[in-house]
Length: 304
Image 1: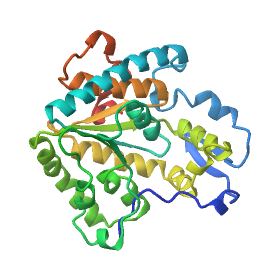
Image 2: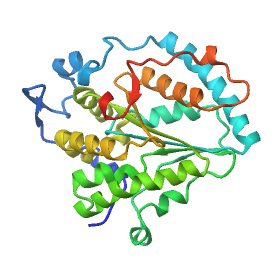
Image 3: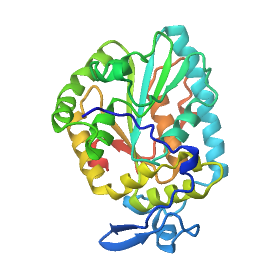
Image 4: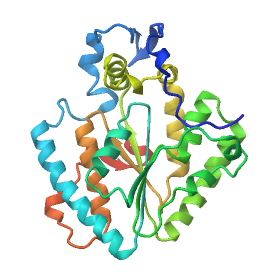
């Protein structure tokens, strides 16, 4: 089978497509979820934030978030000057279930960085030519040169999650990927690139809430796709693929950084802090960066 990217967002005429209610089993209870109903069910509203074992019962206050984020973004600008002066380079890839907050986290990370040397890569499905190439080839074409900071909104890890769960690759292709990727990533690190792998983890009812928000928002409904609903039906399949991916591709040189992302504000802060605390840039203000929240950020399969 051919591999595909995650670009199957809806066309304009799909906005009114009727979607049958989902019949789901959540926390041992059978639930029905009608995403076309503009009223969010109480059971979703009440359990979304704490779903999946999220450790906080309230979101980070907006005023606190804005103050902390501004300090961190000032540090990011300083870090970018250091990259350009030193010729160092960075790759940050972001993975997670649909609606985990990858795009918003990348936006907050790059918001005040100079776009001339800070790029985001969000690849569409592969072309006919790319489907005939080595799997990693089209991603390597977007790697940074000296002084660049590159983020990947989804990455080669499509082959560890989306593709095997939705049947877009063969079991043999999936297994070959899991065998090959540790060596591939060792080459990235050995070449001197600062490499970060983030997995943004969300609970099942939080995902449903975010899908519902997208479906009924005139500003965000372009983000919603029927394939998201197919993914919601396959929650357990994605969980199994995630666990296998984390176990097989966690290495000392390229560990998975797991961020509990039910609260987007805390998740964004955690991601930026980890990057800033990991890079030896000139003028780093450790006090301004602050300490990591170990309830939100950790490493590998044992943290999910």
